[in-house]
Image 1 (spheres, rainbow, N blue to C red):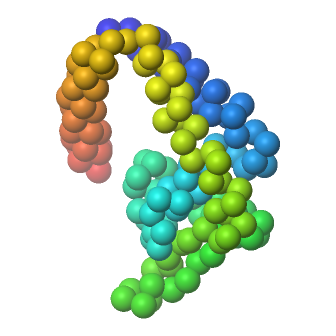
Image 2: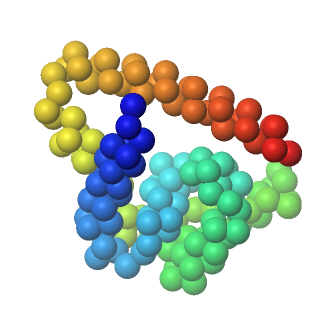
Length: 145
């Protein structure tokens, strides 16, 4: 398998998303956080970090920018006072609502060249490869700690 093809494929998707969301005035990480919060309100910051495999500092900086722009709010979790729950504001929901499916739309468009059976096979192979990738990631993290 050619890693360069994988890399180019995902870069094409990311560039498509960047072009489709450039008028939002937020960067790639901020966009992803807003989409996450659109579907998962009351998310703790560490869940956002884990879901996108981003370091906590990157997420914290993005959240600070989004909060300054009035797109998110943070509130103390009543069950765990050391944890903040993050939510989109109404302005944040308005900003992101038409752009939440940008990457789903891209995948649908590029996979349109595959038959339904090929799409099912590709999904099954991708699931299998993702499982291996996650296991390797965990194994590598454990061996380097």
